[in-house]
Length: 155
Length: 448
Image (cartoon, rainbow over the protein chains, first blue to last red):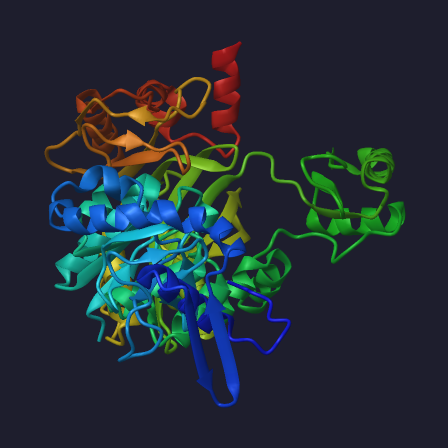
């Protein structure tokens, strides 16, 4: 979460782009904005990183297909769910009206922000403990959550 | 006005607060650790919020979690019960800073009474009697003799930096004073690196007598008689009764009014207890508890007052419903504490309660949060039930207590029920002839 930013680089944006690259199977994305240009490319050496994401790729489809069943077949999944470390209010979006941090079926990397839990006016980001796919989001936006309450299943 | 109370506690007192709230038509929010998910107060409350792991420091003492729980549940008041954060002035302030009603006294009053030295100073200023003694350290034998002559023998010589009985000496008369003073100084210097000692009146066999008081926070206060809690083990009360077998009506009235006047002058709000040592007709202030007390049902049984409901009413801004002239003690009540402990060794006995059959019938009240199948967690207090009986007089009350103890069955964990049955067979208990030293001495005899 406390990524150091040695340069004026939007790490979040790079991460998003890298993710997009991964999801779309493109080899290169380039964006330009306010005089800044960022190019994310999948080159030969980067293939080495592929295994990190590759295993996650397969479960994406499997989990998406299994999603309706997950509603019933919960117990095992719930046992492995990411649980709330605090009491508070869950926010699935960074700001009101914005898209969610993650959607069901989306692949995430370890350390990605999954949601925020607000307690006593402090926003506490809940990070993914592992790389994988968001199999299920178990709570609604702005829902009150208890300590130890299952929040999301990332498998 | 209060609509929904967050109960910042667990066990029987959480259930007690829930009952008072529902009797008043108010909603409740239970908070609990992961170890208490199946607890009775959680099952009965209108809403519940898990606030942390088993460790009390991370759950029941976790102020941010408690405040967040109040926020997400929409509670508008917090009742702290006893123990945990009940006498934490900072918690009371934080509750108020979050625009929640604190069901307890002013944080400043909690703070003052929670500080040993400040509490004694406040008590003296309010006209309550302290244990007489030297005002600070005694320099030498001559000064010690002057102080001792003034307060009367026997006297206790105490190390200023002492504790645990070390550096404490009793001088029975003037001849013994100088040698005892020298011994106390030597011991104190050896144990604490400081030979400063002070002198106070020695109480040989005092009783622990406490007055229940209640204030409206606007200068009106009443007392609800006394409780005799002399039967203690390691400063833990075991058996409490009201009225005290040692106090007559005139003494009660005189001392009770003195306590009520002190609380009125302080502007105290809500329930409180002023504790005294009592010996030879004199009271000596020990401390004040700025909260509801474990043994409060004893007072409720003889006065007919619901103290917890009154706390909620007054905190919510309603006028105090208690009037001194209409308060009287009717009959006699005794409470025994039933702990999940070995009745001989007092080793904690957590585990699953297989069977529970509480006592019942006329004049019997049970405040307990356990049920068959309940697992007594190993993380918290061992108190699992309070058995309170009421009778027209002390003799009838004791008979009823014996009957109720015979009925009460708890299987699966060891309890202190057999201890109470044994105590009832003792002539001193039957005669009300005991001091704060009685129980420890009796337990020693049982072991020998």
